[in-house]
Image (cartoon, rainbow, N blue to C red; front, side, top):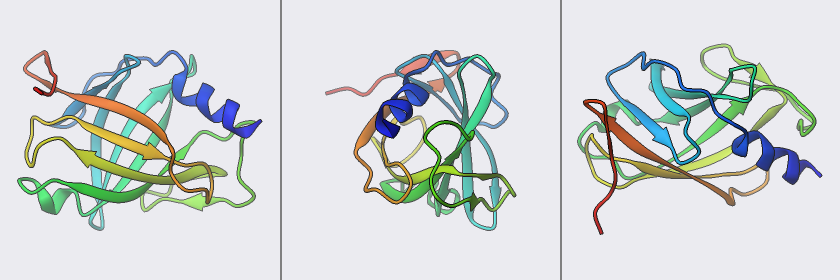
Length: 147
């Protein structure tokens, strides 16, 4: 049941919001991911979910130090609490707390911006297995990878 609720969370209609940082990406479902801030070496990316506009936060240690050397990063996500909550509460370096969280493995297409990325996400302590895609937004254009 939690898997269906988790899929619904990420597959929900996503609302767009203005970019708050220099870098932004568009999810394949239409929501805009923004790079909000860096706290103690952890980059915090976020995007709105559902009608409420509450934000899911992706915490990516080491991203800010790898501006021109991006590859694969292991991090985690924290989202709004709901039906698929974990049996614990996780607190991010920005103070965000929730019982809805999981691991994330983010892989960038190119070593520097503008570059899209793919992320594997997991629920609670389960291994990441659900995939999302984000393409870079650069000068009001969505940059899609070339094959």
